[in-house]
Length: 327
Image (tube, rainbow, N blue to C red):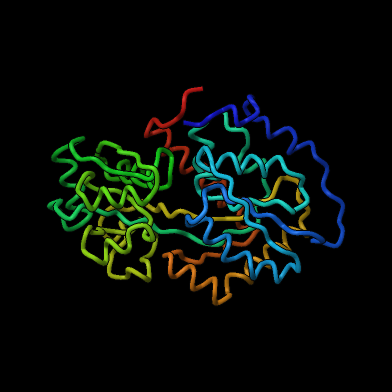
């Protein structure tokens, strides 16, 4: 559950400073290291992406890029810290669909707002999720799973990487679109979820491809579909949910850089250019491929509409799934 003590004890506390701060004067920039705050612990997908991009990004900026891990409360601790930072572009957050898409709907007292508290810089990638079942479940396709869930409503269970996570919300979206019910079993990360899928403790789940790839290749679990708008190159034989007969379940995790509100536009543009260039570096592409991350650059101009659409989409899922935390 979200610890509101981390949020200065008042709903929207981050909003007033963010809106009241004057824009930083235009100067040669950067003249010192730039910090990218990762809202999760080391070694996860967001951390790997931040570190891979950091080196070529630093070369383009002419200053070091420091990655700082600051986990807690579904990424909200890090997001709020950056929302409250000086709008000088020296402190950024590598946000996700959780920090900037779903948390605002789940936690009414969240101390920042995905749109008002930040200037979006650019999106860099997506992390596709697979609909995975234990190998003994008697279904071969997503439509067969839907039929089984309808025959036995509420009897099967599904695992996720935690309440409010992209894995959890992906399954809630699937349940809504397919009109089915199942019991939720939250885990602390993809590793434990993958282990219990292999052991047959949970029947199915949506899990990042990177967290389940080895088990899929080893035949220890089975993937029925991908919750993306297109197939994943590393698993090109697995259909999307739309192709499998369950449309409108596009639930990719996404990562994007954000700066505090009022950050000067020229600095945002310089950061976006450096990040876009970094995505073409061989080392970055290799890291992405190794971890089943799909490069997806979305420029600054497209980000406000994208974030607004994500906030609206997931707010409706959260409402229908009754996941809003009580005030």
